[in-house]
Image (cartoon, rainbow, N blue to C red):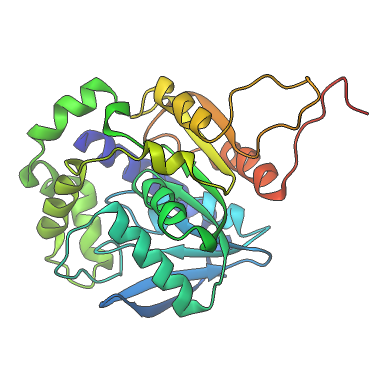
Length: 291
């Protein structure tokens, strides 16, 4: 899995130069949230959209999808606990904790309700946000997400017990961490928390069934969660039935990106945008039986 994180960051960094002009309009700010100084950037205009990055990542490594979304939305891109320019605190990194941080962030910046787009760790935090703070989420886009530890690919599950701090400190993104971090020497502590996060129990099926907000599930066809798990998540959200039978389509959606691993989900901004924008705008393709 450490190779997966390395590749994700390297690939996303390659996208940053192409998005430089759009990023120049982003305004960086800090706000106190649950004892940490949380860094975030605001860009674009339109309905508010909160963007949550993956583990070991930050706003720049999310690549070109943020400036692309900022063309049609008021984007609030957040750096989560211990990541990027946000300070760490003496507290484990868990999905409920991250979700509560995002809810507190929204309160701090005056966002009563917003759409949310999360990738990887950020998508699981988004799923917990809509579970724990449903009134704050209009629609959720969850890319590369799982709702149960049983949904991970077996090869990843087998790797989790083998993860060590030493695996990560030699990776290129360990050096990149120092360039932005409030504490340049804080990377080993962050790694320990993220390894512990991989071992946290995860069985949210009943909570997912109770979600009322529309959810777009995006997965790669070679993602870290199995395809069967993504389909099961979609069914829990009310999807998976046949259309063209006179009933409206479900509010939630499922998108599978072809020839796409976990780390390459975020490196395809135009394809991501083609899935995300119609969902957030409530647009659906017309069938041949519709007028």
